[in-house]
Image (cartoon, rainbow, N blue to C red; front, side):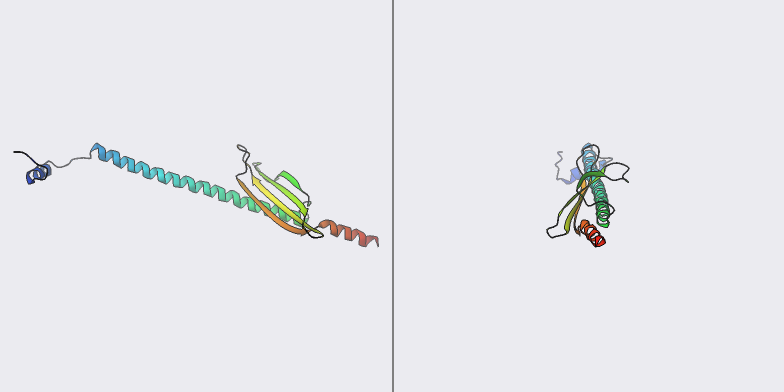
Length: 152
């Protein structure tokens, strides 16, 4: 008797034998699917971690830039151009700020541009930066007016 795959005798014999385990091909496919899923999950976690670090550095750059600009506007720091100034409160020594003070286009007006950068020691290239531009009155005008008023 010859058994043909579609015949009822063949189906009866295979049902009687039963399957006791997984074939090697099924195991390999399931491992490949599992490894692919794990790779995708790890990639997503890595992207999320890098985005979190970038957002944290950007937020700190904004706060530091606003702080320096506030000091210049309040007169705590002199309104002069300067480059690559380290922050005194930075324990890692990776935050630097620069200020550019130019004429603001009108008499007695200054344009102050402050740039804050985070430069890790390894690369030296900034991986987070923020710049802020503000117009303010020239503080020298107030000093000149006070001197002129006091001499009269």
